[in-house]
Image (cartoon, rainbow, N blue to C red; front, side, top):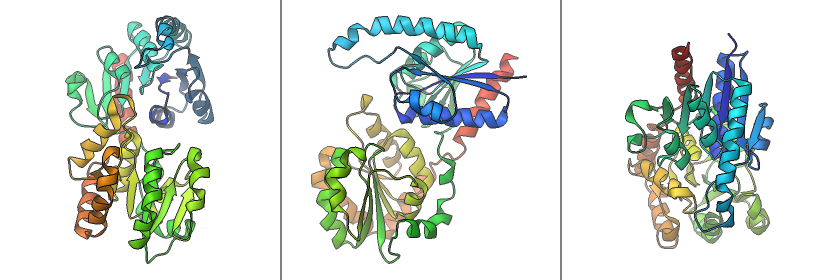
Length: 364
């Protein structure tokens, strides 16, 4: 029997990547299956999903602004338009299961799918549930989560702890150390710090690294610094024998493999990847994301003594102290590495798809 899956998730890579990973795993299990993605018509999913080889339809939808805004006046109109278009898409496509990974477009699509009696599953990447998924939770059959304690947001009986889909090339980075050192032209006698502020970069992290370069030099560290495309012009002249400045890292697997210490934002997927990587991490969460998700993600790890957490507001007073304490204590490095690795969920994508298969069986 030829199955049909409709998938919605977008707005950021953190919603799009899990949606594509789930589709790819479903395709392996059901090679004849048909897929249709639904996104917000002016967001990055309209470009990224076709690049991954899937069809996508766009809805005229956006979120409510937190401040008083003219855009909010259009929200009811956009919602009605998106609900109607979702209804038509579902009627024409006739999916067996609807899957949502968060983002504006998944709200109207999964709401209409639930009303039509189509089995629905949502996946929540963060330790603090997003508005869309909280709203949908009473309407769907299954909720796959990445963190413990999510019953404070969702009905307990619907929750399945699966973890977040992660890149499969991270499963065995320990075997890539030699290749990684050669790829980045690094010195074996020096320890390596990887700095990663997300694909676009992070202004405050970049400022910290620029200011801390003499400190890293004093501690004989070499640095792989991914500053983001917006900041390349500002920081590219900071590069030298010990400091590599990259706008973007195409081989994150090798960057992780080469590193001894990592400084990172705390987006849900970065956190899940870093659990697999199992290196000592300092999280510097972005304070500028919805509901302060990143701080909550980082706290869920640091409270288990599996990473260090420094808030942006405390960087000037705490960073050098905290980092010195880490690089001077092999015992601390070992503890953080072991503890974060224990939190890894390498089979997340497979486990999510198994829940989707159960929905298919229940339906038939």
